[in-house]
Image (cartoon, rainbow, N blue to C red):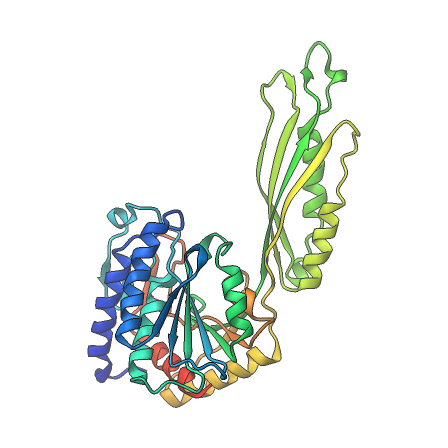
Amino acid sequence: MSSSADHPELNAMLHDLRTLVEIESPSSDLAAISRVMDVMEQWARDLGAETHALPGGTRLFNFGTVYDEKPILVLTHADTVWPHGTLATMPWRQEGDRLYGPGTYDMKAGIVGLYHALRTLRHRWPAGGVQVLVSPDEETGSASSRAHIEAAARNARAVLVVEPPVADSHHLKTGRKGTGHFSLHFHGVASHAGNKPEEGASAITAAAKAVLAVQALARPEVGTTISVGLIRGGSAVNVVPAECVLDLDLRVATLAEAERVTAAVQALTPDDPRVTLTIRGGLNRPPFEQGEDTMRLFGQARAIAQELGFTVGHEFVGGGSDGNFTASLSPTLDGLGAPGDGAHASHEHVRLDRWPDHVRLLTRLLQEI
């Protein structure tokens, strides 16, 4: 574990982390996100990086990259789930070995740890260099950054994701479920519920049947879960409802399962021919399947951790990240950020007793991959 020599480094990391955390950067505010990226870009320039602003708000920082060699790609994001004003109710504070605040664990401490690892390299970049990609919209699905992420991954020899490790166990992430969202819009025929109910075609009735049909597609034994999380419909209690909308969440461990569920959802047909169905959405992030290349990267990380005096395991997790986009394109290892707990929750925090060890692990991976 960490020694007394780590304390100056930890203090410096805390200083940098506070700088980022006190710039609140919800996904809805690109200007605020840009302010976080401006700080990151200045840090990158201080290390001699070439910096690039890409369409849609993504930024790319190149450390020692060369034209004819593939770099190590590191994925980060500057947005958080927290709205402006959250610092008033979730202030930056330290309690023992835990550092609290919005965006600390997910993932501003991961960003800070990465920069301290890069500073430790002291311009001795690995062959091909290091490329850091900063997404502005990871928390909302990476719509503007996905194409940039995939393009960078195709040119990388490995991808490291500085999302936080698994809460409590502090394990790295060697696979993630794919995520999807479908919105089902039912269009029926309105009528007076008392005088002429037979002239109506209930969109709510059709939607209710669809809820049961859709949730029956789940196969939790292979990692496929489906939840109809929102339902909206009707205009008045005495009117046969003409409109109803279902929103469902899909999680899958394999692409084959995503294709099976998507085909079944697209094939849904209401019993009443007077009700029509419009389906929007689909798979947002493909599954990050636990392949051999990722497991080789994890084996290297585990061996390095043992040399550094601690142990690290691995897990397949349900939540998605930008690593879902890269795993099929380049060997990808996730969870290399700061240990802690409370992602998207009021107790979000970083474990200060474990954080320096994980930064050293990341530093060695950048040197040795």
